[in-house]
Amino acid sequence: MRTFAIFLLIALGWLQYTLWFGKNGMSDYAQVSNDVALQEEVNQGLRNRNEQMFAEIDDLKKGSEAIEERARHELGMIKKGETFYRIIDENSEG
Image 1 (cartoon, helix red, strand yellow):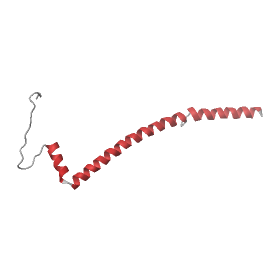
Image 2 (cartoon, rainbow, N blue to C red; image 1 turned 90 degrees about the vertical axis):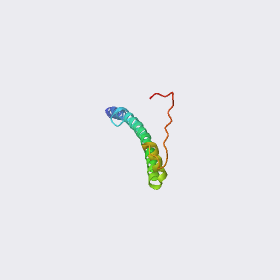
Image 3 (cartoon, rainbow, N blue to C red; image 1 turned 30 degrees about the vertical axis):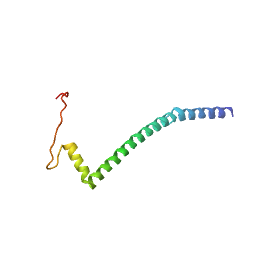
Image 4 (cartoon, rainbow, N blue to C red; image 1 turned 135 degrees about the horizontal axis):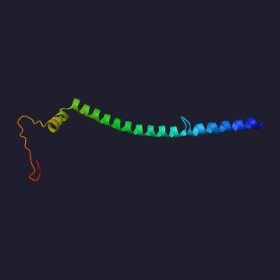
C-alpha cells in the first residue's frame, strides 16, 4: 500500500509539473492569450480602416463631389474657366 501511495504522489507531481511547465501548459496558455489579445487589437484597427475605405468607395460611387475633391487635391485639376493661383511664401525655401 505504501508503494502505491508513493506512486500516486509521484504521478501527481508529474501531472502538476506538466500542467504548469510542460508543453501546452499554463505558461503556453498565457503566451497564447497575450498573442490573441494583440491580434484582436490589430484586427480591430483593420476593421476600422476597412469601414473607412468602404465609406470612401460609397462616396465615390454616389456623388460627384467626392470625385471632384479628389481630382482637385490629389491631381491638381481645375474646372474649365477657373484660374489657378499659387501663393508662394517669401520666407520659404525652394
